[in-house]
Image 1 (tube, protein in one colour):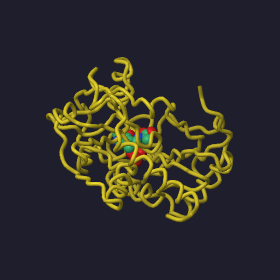
Image 2: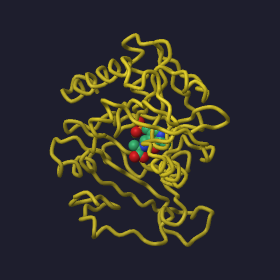
Image 3: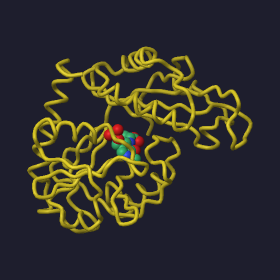
Length: 290
Ligand code: PDD
């Protein structure tokens, strides 16, 4: 079911969603030629906006499109979209494609990007997923070699997530050459002997904003944290495994491929990091941190 959204932003206009129309010749539709962002909004404030806009710039540079808006323009668009949902927690989705052009793989010489954005109330994971943890399955990472670009072409991610769902799991943990990359739509953390380990950034993972925040909080609070390759075997000997994303925050994974992770219950390190994350979020809502 579509969420109740009374207005979206499309190419300079704010419109009811049913009046927002994109050409069938849009390269986003034809080639998946575009990039996107998902930005959480807590207490009416855009969480980690500079980080999301920096990642957007990196994605745009990687696909050789210029950013159609300044930071101030983006803020104006987001603020207007957010107004509909008051101060409730929400997320902004934005996408930029290479626009309308005759179908040709080569870029159009003078692209006019299509810019689309909307805000919707944030749907947090059900409470029992936090208290009990979630199930994941490992699977081969069938994606391309530029997973660092937040590309709208998510067919592989959709296939992988669907495979996990059909196996009764919530997320697929992707494995490339024996090494964990990330989830189908999340980053992965492992806890082993009191240390956090998360795969290093590179072409095979999306540099998650939540991932970076968890690393930042861990370092600030003296929780040992390494950015190191995680072999698939490490998952079976881990004390805890988590997934992170802007919409799921930090979620414990308590079963992988049918076997319990550690004790099979969310661990004490998760409780500690999630409390620190919520503390940070609260300080952000109160305007104490940017
Ligand atoms: N996805 N890796 C992938 C492949 C993702 O799609 C996402 C997020 C993440 C986590 O990134 P962040 O912490 O910046 O949300 C990692 C978003 C939420 C989505 O596609 O809806």
